[in-house]
Image (cartoon, rainbow, N blue to C red):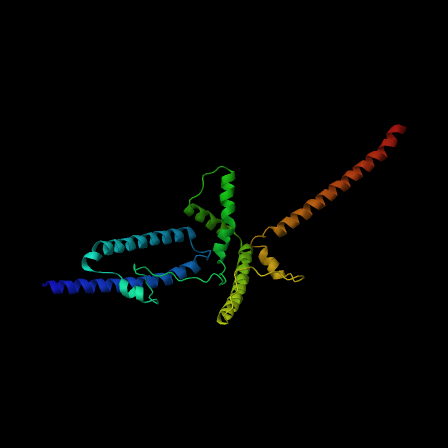
Length: 261
């Protein structure tokens, strides 16, 4: 077999492998999105799902490192680059940098941020309290995997009514986000810069019942429970005071009778 033929086979094999790699990356991105939405389903084993994802990402990182190592080792000897540096530096619209890495899409700091999905919002809500509780009890800090497993178990133990509150809150926040996104795109088309990440100022005498319900889930979730507890304590104290007065009155009434005897 001639050297030219070997070169052609090696080149065709490389091109084919890179094509398959690109195709697999595209499929992986789609699969990640599907996974992202499915992990909120209570029927899924979240612990195993997160572990599988972590292992897959680790394998992906190993494969990428091997490819970069080969290119860095032999690239200079054969004049090979993943991306031609000269053409890449001259083309401002190039999707890759001179080093062969994909350019990061610059995010507009004024664009509204999409709300966290239900499970991740719940995770953010309980995460710090779990860490602080273990710290107060002088317990060993949980690893990220153990913390995720704990939160997953807590989520599965929530009843349907509690989960529905989180779903209602997410749907409301998503509705607000979509509305602010439309306003953001409209202002951008008109050349107006407005920071849509700032929380809207509340209007006087215009408290939304729906907003109150949502606030009871995120940040102020315990407000209704606290009010109920305060009312219960107040009622109990009032009853105790009443019983004390009745006992004092009974004692006062019994005193003259004892003196007469």
